[in-house]
Every structure is written in C-alpha cells, then in structure tokens.
Amino acid sequence: MSLLRRRPRPLAPRPRGLVPSLKRWTIPVLGAVTPVGLIVVNIAAFIVKHLDQFRWSISILAFVSGLMLNSWAGVNIYRTGRRRFPNRTLFQNQNEELVLIGGVAVVIAAAFLTAFFCYQGLNDPNNLPNRLTFLTGVIAIALPILLQAFFHRELRDQPPVSTSTADGRTGSSPPPPTSVGPTSRYGPPGSLPPS
Image 1 (cartoon, rainbow, N blue to C red):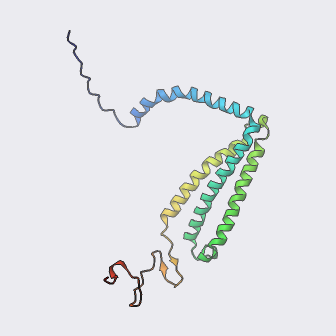
Image 2 (tube, rainbow, N blue to C red):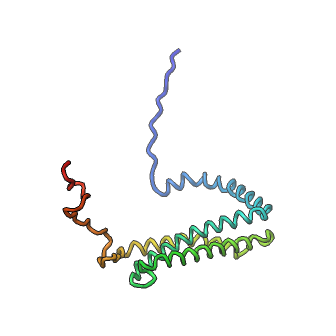
Image 3 (cartoon, one colour):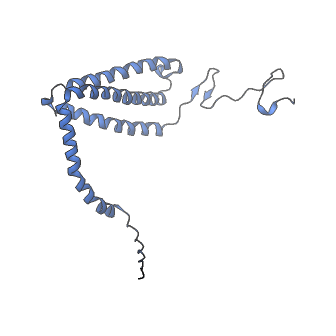
C-alpha cells in the first residue's frame, strides 16, 4: 500500500490595511469582552469586600506613583524653564542645589497628599464608586499623557541652552585639552617620551 502525501498549498498572502485587520480582530475582541468583564467584576468585588486590607497597599502604590510622576514632571518643568528663561536667577548653575532641595520637598509633599487623600477616599466601601474617585482616576491617567505631549513639543522646538563656564566661555562642548609643557611628566598618548 502506497501512501501518497498531499503537498500543502501555499497560503495566499494576507491582505494588509485597516479593513482586513478589523475583520480579523472583530470576532476575537467581541468574544473576549465578556470573560474580561467577568474577571474585572470579580476582582473589583473582592477588593471592595476586603477594602480595609487593600487601603494601605493602594495608598502606598499611590505614594510611589506620585513620587515617580511628580519627579518626572518636576525635572521636565525645570528643563523647560531653563531653556525658556536661562537668565532667571532660579535657573542659574549656582542655584541648582537649592532648586533640587525645594523640588524634592514639593514632590514628597504632593505624593504624601495624594496617598493620604486616596486612603481617605477608600474609607467607606458603600461610598464607592463616587464622582471624585472617578475624576481623580481619569486625571491621573490623562496627566502623564498630556505632560508628555507638552514637554516633548517644548524640548523639541527649542535649541539647547548654552551654559557658561567658570572661565567665562559659553557653549555646550567641553573645554579643549590644554597643551602639555616641557616640564610635565604626562601628556597626550601621542606625546610620550621614548623609553
């Protein structure tokens, strides 16, 4: 008995574009909506049922998230201010440490207040969901996106700041190497004395 193998036909290339992609993904996405919704509802019900235990962890995560987001925003605000107003006293090189200390204090205070209000907002499970919690979440999601768009546009459109050095020169490149005198023992690699 001979076994004849059928050769598989080569697959036709898939059409590309928006419409074929929508056709391919419509049924799987619609089919996944209900299971994902059930999972989300079960997780939310579990969290609400055990809200006293979750309050601390959610508040700590809000504090860490606030530290990261506020630090990132503070650095970008400082960069933008330094580019736009390089001659202002606040953005001079000698005031960097003062601005850094003040910025860290503001970032920590804002993150603490965020975590505190989050903890207070999760006080009563019967009060959830409420408008304040929902709007706070929407703002917390939209703020990084809007800040990223603003800072990307600001930093892209402006030329880099020229910095002044201690000897009065301006520019962003390092100073040229100094010439090595005859009494110096060490010089550039090409100028070593023969041994």
